[in-house]
Length: 455
Image: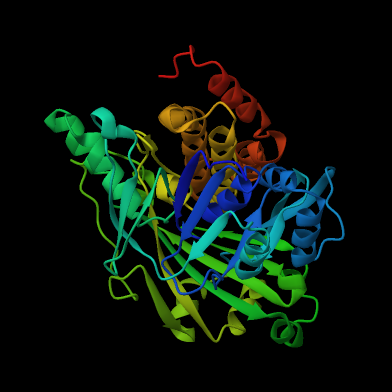
């Protein structure tokens, strides 16, 4: 084996972190360490949806990888034809009505998150070492003189330390890497600019509250044998609230997510102006972001929905409340030899099911520019700046589109009912009509031609 050109530390073993580790496996001259705060990489919880744009990225890992993913979600094959994807109903009334069916070019792939993680873990190579129960507290990055390429020192909450040449923060919405990086970025700025940058460190409550659970398909089938939730992705739309349901785990479960939206907070979720006061979350989760709910607490916000939705609610035994937080639009997702991906960079509202997909795109793009033969330890900052230039505006736009989708679902815009289908489709079609490949080609071009100014 040739001498490694650098060592990359990935803090966070979620979708983004593990996808990055798998993508970097194509480059045997890069050593990878994945540090995960939890005791296990197998995340529990809800389903995850992958749209065609992001799934095309995963296909780059090869046919065997694709086959395993397809087996997880119960598809024998995928299609690139237009198919009915999500049924949309006006459900906040005694008798619901179907408004439209979202047609997409390719399938929406639904996975159980733990199964998805399992496939990624099975493709990690010997050049990647995983570490559990390692939550990052802070890091120190040398900058000046001869030491500017010296290792970055990582300090974990258990008191242990480690070193790396490149640090990637895939550590989620409460990212410790983001906190340290933005403080580095703010050094030397004027008071107003510094205050604005530092205001992006902490996530903000978006005004959205999610009610999540998994419903055993057998239980729903016993109550309503032909319920649409057993076979198709359905969104029940209502004033300031909505429900999203779809089958996962080869039809063994129905993923259920209900949402309530507070319009004033949703409208200002991405404002970086620290002078704008915001309410923090306070509710059934006792001011924590996540809390367990009884059946009665879970169904209360949706008891006015149609009978079709009530069949689902009748199957709920307990559930989880999530105060959906977002990250303000960052001024940068990189600084020196440190970069952010996924929720650490652009935690967004869940209404287009694109958070996981954007993490996948971040990871693959980042691996492409870091693994390129022209990238050396000395040019890592440029490679990360290229990532920031080409990925940050796109993911920020997706975050805005996801918010708009939620507002359309919750009837918080002035779009009339008969035009909702066109508005939602146009706002969402990037997920199946565009590809990452153009950005990848531009990224490679910028890596190979160092004379091009990327600022």
